[in-house]
Structures are given as C-alpha cells and as structure tokens.
Image (cartoon, rainbow, N blue to C red; front, top):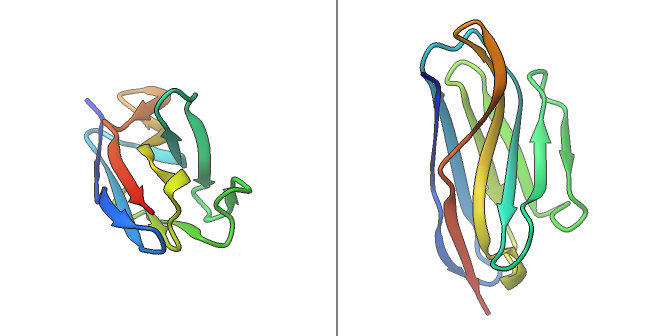
Length: 119
C-alpha cells in the first residue's frame, strides 16, 4: 500500500512562517507530480502549488512570492515553505501525488494538516 503522511501544520500569527512536509511510503516505482491543496471552512478544495518530477513549479496567484514548493526525490518527500502568512491562508492543507506503484498509476492524498493564521 502507498501512503502519504503530512507534518508541520500549526498556529502562527500573521507574517509568520511554517514548513509542511509530506512523505510518500510503500511500494513506489515512480512519483510524478506532487501538489499541495488547501480547503478552508465552507470553501472548495483548491490547488495551491505543484511540482513535477523534474522540479518545474506552478503557484496559485494568491501565494506567489510567499510560498515555495520543493521536493526530495531520494526521500519521496515534498515540502511547502510558507512565509508572510495571512489569515486567509488558514485551511487544512493536503498533499497529493501521482504515483506509480503496485502496477497501478493513480493519485494519492495525505490526511491533511491544519494551518491557522491569526491576525
């Protein structure tokens, strides 16, 4: 079985920083894109940022210049460095990865980690 385990969420004041991690484990042959999504209360889940296996990145306009996604392919881990946090960044953050394992290629989701930013 393939699992994604997230860590690093918490509560910070506006202007602060947090770093999220998401590690994939199990029988993994290859990991393609890795993404971070977030879902605020009463809102739909939205894509925050993504990174390809080669390291190309994309960001939502709302986080450009403040968030940085990176990955360590040797550790099957993706990171999200969040700086200059704003109250509107408050949400549950989920990692998502396109993984080829057990002879099947599919998306996997982490369990989510809460990020709370107070003003």
